[in-house]
Structures are given as C-alpha cells and as structure tokens.
Image (tube, rainbow over all chains, first blue to last red):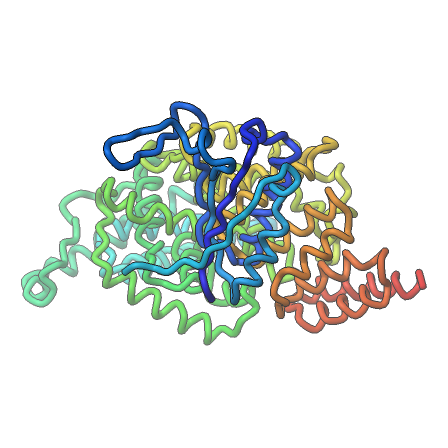
Length: 113
Length: 413
C-alpha cells in the first residue's frame, strides 16, 4: 500500500462554504473511503479567507492569502492508502468538488523518518 | 412443597445476583492475589444455604442470611490464618489481608467493591474473548457451563480461557481498596469496551436462547449503572454507552420471535418497543452530551436513538452518523451498516455500487446484506447471496430466517 495526499483546490471563494447538499455528498465520499479502510488521515480544512491566510516571501514580504495572486487556492487535504496512484485517482474522481469547478491534486507521500 | 418450589427458583437467581457482590466485598479484604479464598467462602456460603434452606425453609431475608454466614466464614478463616500468619508473611510479603476490620456488606461497600472489581477484571492484557468470559464469571456470577452456552463453545475451551485470564488478574497487583484516579483513567477505556462487548454478546448472541441473551444485556446495563453511579467514573462516554444499551434493549422483544428467530428491522412490530427504556436512553444521551467529546459510543447511541424514531429523515441522519463513526474507527460491520443506511437513503442500486467498493468479506452479514439489496433487483443473485450467508452463519436462528427469505424469493419468481 502507498499513501497519497489528496489536495483540494477551488478557484472561487464563494464556493468555499458548501451547501448542505455538497456537505452531504462530501461526507458520503469521505465515509466511503473510510468504509473501504483506505483512509489514513481525514486531514483538515485550510481556511482561505482574509485574516486566516498569509504568504511569506523573501525579503520579509508578507502578502494576504494566496488567493490574490494565483487563481486556485488550496482548501484542504486528506491522506489515503491505495495500491497505486491510479486507484487513488479513481477515488478522487468521486469527490463532489468538480461540480463547482474545483480540482484535486494527487501526490504520493514520501515519509520522512 | 411450596417452600421447596420457592427454594428451587430462588437459589439459582440469588446465587447469580449475590455471588458477584459477595466475592467483590470479600476480595477487597483479602486482596486480588487471593481471589480464590473469596470465591471459596462465597461458594461455601451458598452450599450451606442450599442445604439449610432445603430443610428449614428459606429465611425471611435470604440476602441478610447469606451475608451473615459469609461474614462468619471469613472470620473463621482469619482465625485459622492468624495461626500461620508469620509463616505466610515470610512467604508472601505482599499478602496484606485486612482482618482488623470486620467485613461489612453495606450497600455502599458492595457497590464500591464491585466497581473496583470491574476495573480489576478489565485488564487490557487479556484478549477480548477472555475479557468477557472473565467478566461474566467474576462480575456476573455465571458458571463455566453458562458461559460456554452463551459463547456456544466447549466447556474445556472456556475453562482454559478463564484460567489464563485469572492468572493475569491475580498477578496484576491491582489494588482494590481505594480505586485511584490513575487506575480509573488508565482502564476506563477497557472497562467500557468490555461492557460494550458483553452487551453485544447478548444482543447479537449466537445463542438462540432468549433468556441468556437478555441476561447478558441486563448484566451489562447493571455494571454500567455502577459506573454512572460513581462520580469518578460517571463520564460522558459511560453515559453514552448506557444510552446505547437502553436504546438497543428497547427493541429486544421485537428483535426475535418466540422461537428465538431474528426478525429484521423492517419487519419488527414497533409496538413491542419498550418506550420506558427509550426514555431512559434519551436521559443518558443528554447526560453524555457535554460538548467536548464525541466517542464512538456517542455516535452509536445517536444511531440507536434514530432507529427508535419514526421520523422521515431518520435514515439520512443515521447515514451521516455512520459516516462519522467509520472515520473514528474502521470496522467491517460499521462499513456494512453504513451501506444499509445508504440503501435506505439513496436506494439499493447505489448501495450495491458501494458494497462493490469494499473488499469481499467471508462473513454472513456481507452476503445477507447483498441478498437483501438484490431482492428486488436480481432475484437469482439475491438467492445465491442468501445461500452463502447461510453457509457462513453460526447462528441457527439466523440461518432459519435466511432460508425463509429464499423460500419467499423462490415463490416470487
């Protein structure tokens, strides 16, 4: 088994707060992964809203959020375990984020230890 | 004659009820190392009772009679032991029986001793199976025979299992005198798990004997009440578990028919649900809600709560809770229960797609669930899954209800 981080991205801040229906679908999707015993870490939400997001750059430059400069911003992540990256991709496809134009980046986790 | 009849009914019942209490109080005096002494005195007391009562009739207050005899027997034992005291002290430096204070069987002492005994018995070093067996023997006064019946295993196997667990118990060095905060903190988790398993052993019993089932469930509730009755152990989790037990118990009459056959949820007569137990469940569930923790018992209790309601959105809520539960702790059963809830909310076809994502399981529930889901979609498949479920089931009553299903489905074709 390999571990993969699924990194969620949105490009419209107004989609950040999900509707009850989206929430329900998201929980079903997450529950389904856990029910297959493939969830390693249910992860966290990363708040993209003003006051909760800053970017630190060289020469002490600090800007608000990542959302002012790049089109897409990260909203959260989970970690799953699957046999292959293809299987992880299949699981990612079931997430309702695509309905609001979001994307999921699938990245194999290389553990530091 | 009447007396003899009373005697025959009363003694086994009293034995079960008082055995655990008396052993706990005595053991508190003798120390866990010498649990056999406490058990011997208790057994001797019952032997004397059955002889004496058979001839002279049952005394007015049988419990008080038992306590007096046990007290005297303990005194005799102390007298005997004080003669060889020095000898023993040399050999067992940790032996510190309390024979300065007379043994009292007050209500307070009985519940304190029993509570301490629960924590002593629930040792994380034991396997789940031996844990429940030991709890049944020491905390509930079940005989080896009765435990073997409940587990549908052989007497010898249970005996062996118990022996190992008892060795662990004796050598654990657990202090029964004053239950310390630390002991409680380190073991509360195991205690709750044991009570949970004990209850489930009754509720989902392999045995079709309704009496044994109810007995196991009510014993688990009795022990859980000891936890909620003491401020040190009256935690949110303990209340959540108790709520779960009350909700589940409320359906116990509706779950099986007079032959002990399991009746599926959809087909249960809801009028048989015990509303007073549901109300008690509600009470404990409210107690369990302190806003800080959501344990798996909270979630399972909430699921059981929704099962007792007739509201329209119940299955939606149940599915939501299963989604949370499976995040806290993966288990194959939870995964399958979640699929059942999914079928109720989104229909069988979607639920089947969900099962297909799971690894096939070699357990009867996996196949009976698929059998259920395919009933109206593909009868042939439904029947073949029910057949597999029968071959994997360990419960006669379960097999019978699946056979009935197949017969029905064959008729539908």
